[in-house]
Amino acid sequence: MTIQPAKLSDPTVRAFVNAVNSHDREGFMKLLARGATMADDGSDRDLADWIDREIFSTHGHMEVDNESGGGRALVARYRNDTWGEMRTRWNFTVDDDGLIARFETGQA
View 1 (cartoon, rainbow, N blue to C red):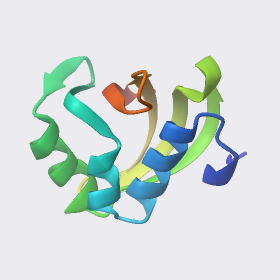
View 2: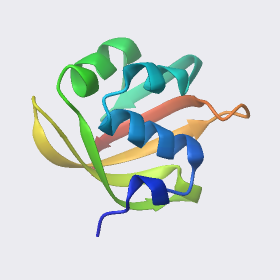
View 3: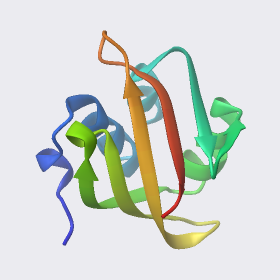
View 4: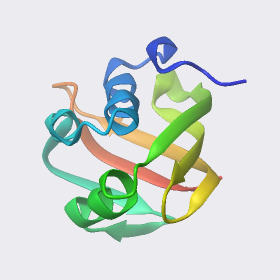
């Protein structure tokens, strides 16, 4: 059963999912802390390159199936024009200012 983005527990993660799904690059970038990092399938990646390639240039979209860790850990069906749809996990580190310092994703 899909969790509607508006029902996600953590407000920063909720905004992240909404920015991805509405292809709002500017809104997405405002959610990231200065120096934010990310990893895909356990390997650190260049954040700017990854989000362009995996989200914004390929129409990325998340359908969240469940959340844990206070809303900072998600399992979602993620799809984009490059890879199609896959079951993924997402883990977020949110700093004291409510910005994403790091996120990690990969196949679930």
